[in-house]
Image (cartoon, rainbow, N blue to C red; front, side, top):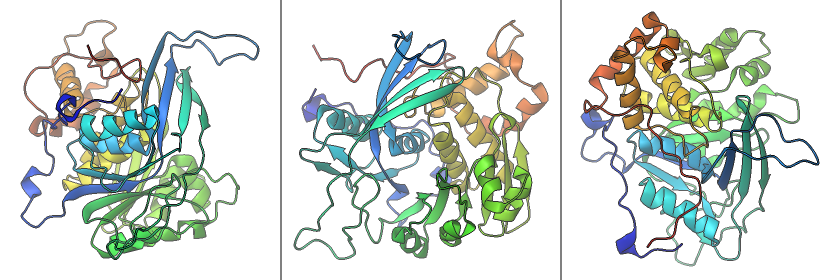
Length: 395
C-alpha cells in the first residue's frame, strides 16, 4: 500500500478560505491545533436491525477511514482551516493508511505526530442502523514518548490518551480543541490559553456517574464549551438544556448546548446574547462524528468572526450533512458539499420526495449568509466522498 512521493495525491485546497480577510503577516502558522487518538474505523451500514447473537448479518454498505480525533481534524481541514494534529500512529498498514489519508489526502500537518514501531493501530468497527450506531473498539496504550537528547526546550514527555507526545507549550495556533476528562488536568490547555490561543472544549460521558462540576475546572482557560444536553444538565444540576447553557455561561465565554433533533442553543456570557437554531431535516444514515463536525463548524465561524446565530446555524448544517453519509471523517463535509446543498435548496422546484421538501422555507432563510461564502460554480447534489475499502492497488 506504500507509494512513492511522486505518486502521492496533492493535498486538496478548500475552495473557500473562511479566514482570508483576517490573515496578516506574523499570524500563527496554524489555525487549529488538536491532539488525541487516531483509530482505523470500519463502518457497516444498511443493517435492518442490531446484530442478533448466534446469527450472521450482511450489511448493504461499508467504508473505512481514519477515526477518533481524525474526525475533528478532517472536518476542520475540509472547511479550509490550517490544521495541526499530534497523534500516535502504528507502523502497520492501518497506521500507514491513516497517516497518508490525513497528511496527503486532507492536508493536515502531522509534524508533531509519531509512528511507533511494533505498535498496532487502534481499530473501531461501527454498525449503523435505525439512525443510531453500535461500536466495538480494540487497541493498546502506546508506549511512552521519550524526549531525545538535545530536543528543543518546552517539550514534555507527557502523553495524550492515544500516546501522542503533547508539547508542554503547543505550537502557535489561533485555536485548539480540547477534550475535558473528569479527574485529569491537561497542562497544555493553560499554556496554550496564555499564548492567546482560543480553546474550544467538549466533554465525554462521565461513567462514574458523579458529574462533579469541579471536573470542569479547565473551563477557566476556554473560549467555548460545547456539551450535549444530557451532559450540560447533569453538570449544572438543571432540568432544562437552555437553563444549563446559561449556567455554563457563568464559567466560559461561549456556552453551546446541542439539542439533538431540536438543534442547538448558545449563550455568549460576555454580552448576554443568545441564539437558537433548529436542526436541518435530513435522512440520517450514520451519526458517527456528527458532534465533531458540529464543533468544527462552530469553531470555523467563531474564528471568522461571524454573528453567533450564523455560527450556530453553520455548525448545525455541517453536522446534518455529515449524518447523511457513513463514517466519521469520511462524511465530514467541505465547502463543496455546503455549496451543493445551498444551491439545491435555493433551486428547489417542488419535486415530491426531494430532500428540500422537508425543510421549512422560513427556517431556510436563516442560511442566507451562505450566499457570500459558498463557491458559485454549480455542483451536483448529493455529493459522495465515501470509499468502501482501505485502499485499492494502483495499476
